[in-house]
Image 1 (spheres, helix red, strand yellow):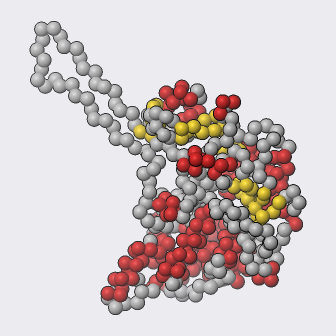
Image 2 (cartoon, helix red, strand yellow; image 1 turned 180 degrees about the vertical axis):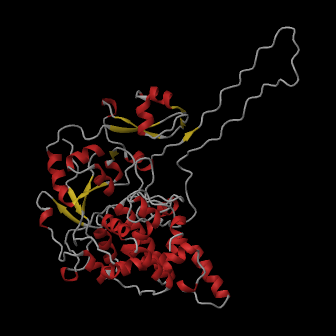
Length: 467
């Protein structure tokens, strides 16, 4: 029986010692650079339930790590008032954060960064993992496509690691550290994360030319960026003293919420949910990067499962004797309609269209990768090259040739009756044409998110309208 790799990764970074409130282990981290830097637990001879955190309150640990100075500006006070007047909204976003904060805090602590940085997804996405802005920034940390590629976040047919909880967090902290080293200030680093480093440099040059200071509060910034740090500091104030603002923080244990499981063979998402005995929405909350109903082993992927369900999943998997995956992938060798491609591949046309998200009236371009049901002729796992580089490009078909009436014998052709073929329709929907020039992080619109609950976050422009 094909099994997933038994290596289980508890998402808790190697940092410090027990006396500082951090976990420690002598177990080396996984060599794969795409894997999280985390303690490894082998369930053959270790029990997840025997791993405990030295403190039972994550909020205390976050407060102890605050390093940034309060701004105490009218903008910060205004943001605090806005949040404190919406306790339901704050409670929803705080509750959502409970799945992810432990891992983020572990990573922040390991890098000796201020724990205020761990609160940044409140500003960016309200901790909605599927948040997407109008500018096409996505995920907890709202990565734009081009910046995601800069930080090696895979974006293809099978997955978008800008939505991956572990990978996007590591990339965001790498980016913020780079910006802090560049500008020498966390306030300026945060402003650059939001507006772009190039724009901050230009703003500083304008101030230098005018003989003005170049710190965050002295720069001329767009309204959204001007409010960006005050919003983060408002969350800092609420976490520091929630009772003062009538906010009740949810209980958060200083303990991993999820465990990462290495994928040893391709496996269907539905089967993971079944074997782990978790609701589909819980799986989606922890694994929002998967675009297809199959998880690929050759993509160095990991499955995040709730802490208490990792052992359940492993036990059920050992007793499962049926095939793990019912899907595979193939490359289309010539441009053709979905109907033609379905016949060529020997699959149902509706299945091909639905599973690959192909709108009606579009053709599949040559070189595209499509997901199809697995058969005995295609029984293996999806190969590494396809798992890492799969793309789907579509185009509109050319219009049919015009039907010109046959000339009548003896009749003279009219000078105005020209039969001209219309121009070809423009091609579109290529998945490779969405790269942005720079990262301009798009914060979620607080007011809109407050009304919509767990729906996808709105764009930055919506956020800028809020105080």
